[in-house]
Image 1 (cartoon, rainbow, N blue to C red):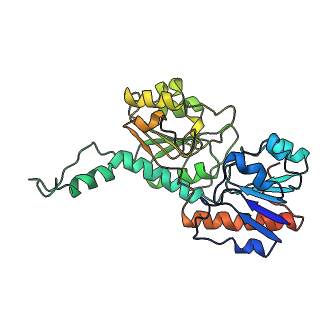
Image 2 (cartoon, rainbow, N blue to C red):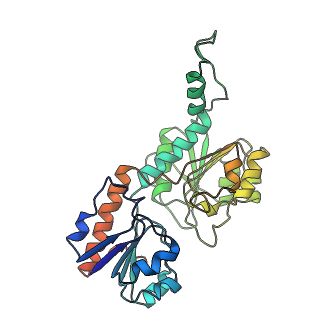
Image 3 (cartoon, rainbow, N blue to C red):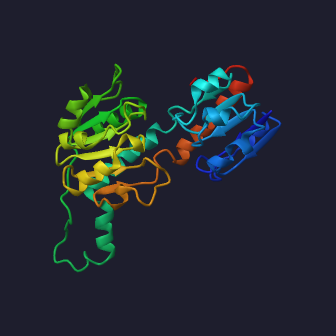
Length: 319
């Protein structure tokens, strides 16, 4: 039995161990990264294939005759043609709910940076502005309290629920839209409303929806023009949920106050991505999931996935 990992680096840049795999199978081949054009050649003899972002389309899978099982290194599995895999008798699993705390934490890191501009004020202090000041304090931008503001959550799974709990701790009012019936077991209160109400009533909108045909380009100019001019937009879900050209225009023209995103439609970022030139947009490099704690949980779940498959008791199956 042979395991091939196509893109190991992001999940484990060296601070975790793959040694447990050698106890389960005869051969393990680990590639830190792979070009899409290298996938077939590298995976052609694999019984088990592990990947984070490589596309496993019907065309690719049809050229992997030995493949029996796929596990992602992420929660999302839209890179896999799960229908074709199932037709071929190939099971696929994902890694659910490992990064809930890390992602929800980054939502507020982005939001607090927009409302308090910590980095900007630190820079001015280090540049000597405070030492030259006649006053004991100063601020370069308006400072905004979150208490009493309305946070709108689009998509209310585990991460959306965790974001709601943190928002309640900040004494924010929380409203949410979910296409499916949801409950909220956290402290405080969440009101479930229509998508249009989330858009028009929120002071902050945080996106937590999967990328589907329905959500691709969901945040477009029509969406943005319905938002309050003072509102902030945060995206830690999938980059393509936002029409990035429309968001840049909205930021440049003052249609909304600011945005913080951890994901872009194409990653790594392309040099011509319009958001790279948007002054009111904070961009982090898809790192919300990447804390040591989150990646440790990811590795434990991956181990359970692989062991479950080998023992004939597969878990976290998505097809």
